[in-house]
Image (cartoon, one colour):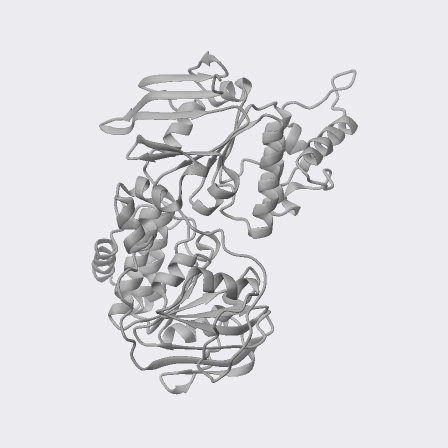
Length: 527
């Protein structure tokens, strides 16, 4: 059968940099095809070559049986290729209908827009994707998931034969991911093919038929999803032997868990007015304690309480044996607590500032001589962390928005490590970064722990908790309900604790033996 898209031997060079060499990709009609690889593997460049953003320097591309060389994105759209980028190209202030039919509005006699028909068209297309919303309302009033579906609806309205989705689930929760997957399956039923670019490997096994792996700008391998496994994909992306991945694990924590030191922090029955009902945990020096739970289980609320962002309504906390009750985040930082927030774009980076300015934000007072910043000391500090954490930048004054997600995350880690914290709270530290950056971040965490630092690790990724944590505290509906110890922690034990099974319970540090929780497992294994 003739494929819908066939890319063979594509080459692209920018100056002296060879971005693509022997890039290949073949997609059948009605297929969901994954494209994966580390940052810099060439995925984005290949998509831009396909859609006319860049012109290729060599190779062949055939789409819908015809050789193609698009000189601009509009030509690709007219040919039947729609691209939905991670940063949605939609107009939030305009209605849902306007976003779907923009540029192709139905007209009445006299050239006026027929809004009745337009609204009906938009409603019908969304209904075909399983979405029932008021299309007259401004798009910005809806969730990110609905906005993703509106972008898909716009592609359907243009009779797209191939829809390219770039990290479509990066900002979605579990229920919203399921809604997106249902829409993708409906696209398949229409005969529409989907090119699915994602860092989340588990998603590939849920929704994709085939996967293509790229590394260093070149094709590495193709696999049918039904005939492969996660370790093979990780090995292909990293250029490693699959047996090494399966022997040493998918994370960079690795090795035996070392003994921990004295008790540093303890929370006993803490509650806040922000969905935290009753949580207890202990963290020792040199220890990584994981927090596991489903969306809304209270993991982030624990972090906010410990960091002084939410006041306690009940319970007690202690630090180094003394009472600890920070009135705000500044007080927590002063006492040696640091928090790397889950959403680095909204709560972490300041996009318009440089790498240097972002890195030193938390320690500016200590870098001042009188009322002036000691720029020499600042630059030495930044140079140290850029080298120590292997942050890839052209210059420390480069705007942080130009960095990859993994390097942005390492800058934020450096910001908090520069405060020399006793307890480092990490909320989804490797979310949304590629497999290489993920392992580098895990190495940084491990190095910090090995030097006596204590870590409270919130992660939806089973591998990180199983391979990295000494103990895992299970959260459910704002309560800590169990503590699972390592060695001995396995995926089945963790799944059972999260899904309402009966894993072997262990002492939670306060002599309590409690039951476990209900619903689903994580989708967060990342490429």
